Length: 412
Image 1 (tube, one colour):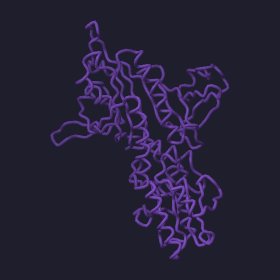
Image 2 (cartoon, helix red, strand yellow):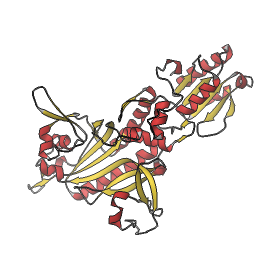
Image 3 (cartoon, rainbow, N blue to C red):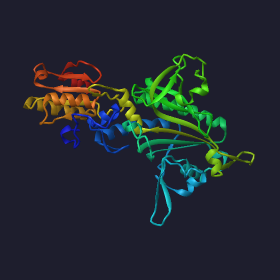
Image 4 (cartoon, one colour):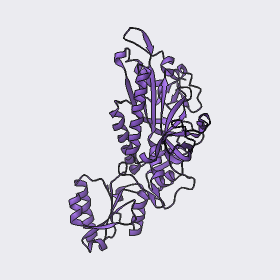
């Protein structure tokens, strides 16, 4: 893509009302735009990142037998009355012109449970794993930290349906492994830890996946030995010990929650009277699990972890483009070689973002390249061409190196 054709622009300064690095950098670099508190538009560069995160998640959930659906965002009141959750203050509620009550979905247990119930009647139909990637709406009181806490947000929510607790537990462990693989592929695997959290009304504990960052809004107690963490909210129950090895040498860390998983057990199947017939003909309640990842939150967490004073440093796997090609001067030779490299890179299957802007100085182009943060920068200038080269520099390195144009073509 040619940068001159991009309708968005970078900003010299971050919005004054934004405090978190992810919001400051993503807005400045032209990845997102703030409509109102907790509601953001994903611009062309930001949407490319979001789609790459979405594809990573989809591949890993498909690998553990997830079947993708798209459920309604508009929910009738009757489904939520069945589970006695209509009174939740987080719900956006509205009425139709006929006076019927609806809500905007902030979670989908009340929708997916009766849906699967229509098709699952026997033990032969189990287990079932259903997921979607869809917008959620939550009336948050503490809207802050850019993409980390929003009113409207994109989420992957997976729901599993099981014959017995053994089957539920086995799949729960599969999801744990899949989540770690997702975060590894997104470039935050080394900073992300399994964390014990409150299970609420479902079970004693649930699990969160917390990513360490100095800018995190959560506090976790991390065991350096076991690499298991405990959320601050339930630490007193543990008597300040590691649940796994009982060590008291725990480290208090700031972190961002990037995913969570729950064993719902029979809470929702009981409410909807969702039963199946066993081999012996007896009816038993389905057991359920739910597993969530906020895609925007994950994108924000990646930026919180991977940035420096000059801008974002995108991991290769989620970067909007692989190479930022900069044509530094408006000379016929520089422009000719730059255009040729751009075409060759594209033909070679390389995702390239070509800064061909004529109204920007070399300094402005270099500053923007650091701010946008693509993994590799390729600079064409009179200085490099005098040596028959282009300059190649990785975003996370301080210095670049000259490579002959002929070698660049071989690499392609």
